[in-house]
Image (tube, rainbow, N blue to C red; front, side, top):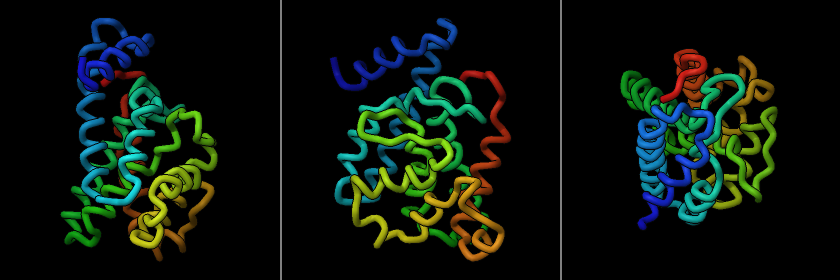
Length: 192
């Protein structure tokens, strides 16, 4: 049995809140989203990224959900990919201001702390800061290589930004815009 088959079986076993008739589709979508997540992260070529990817695989990120939006099994992963797609589209329409690496880092890891992992401290109120802490733990060089991306991740929580900050940090502004757009498009109580 290969790793993908093991992961699919793991997801099916834990998707007890998903109607049985929808589980195959939900598992297939989660696996597709994980492939997008992992290939995007690998493209960054950061020291320690494989360790972070392994930790994400060991966490429940593929199953995690939010209490505010995407509040269904695998909702956080679906939201992550939605933010990535929106940021990429908005960046292209705006003249490609940001590098693809910045977009990948910000969009794919902004909510990483929403997953449960034995080594991660989860706090929804500080989730931007906690996501930054997790990223730095595995890829210490990320702050030097992508300071604006890390700033955007760490300050996207509602308690950590203000209008002046958003105007001074366009990557934070784009993340907030795309995060909100994706959250607003989410049908309540729906499965993928």
